[in-house]
Image 1 (cartoon, rainbow, N blue to C red):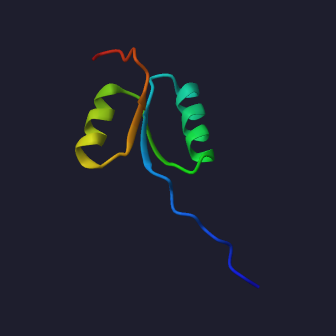
Image 2 (cartoon, rainbow, N blue to C red; image 1 turned 90 degrees about the vertical axis):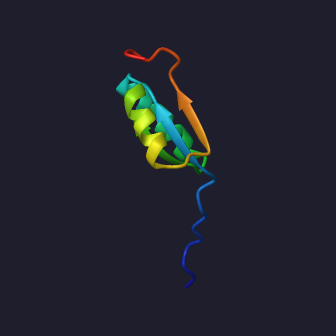
Length: 67
């Protein structure tokens, strides 16, 4: 019996949205296409995440309160 093939992620994506439902949809969609996803719910959290990790792409809401 062979072990299942595990493909590495296509890339590491930061998803940012202040709406929890939309953030969940973004995460699920990106993961279904093979991306690893870090999801945060504010612009400030996104800035902090970007300081501490490298991302191949950032997908965000264009209207973030507080920024």
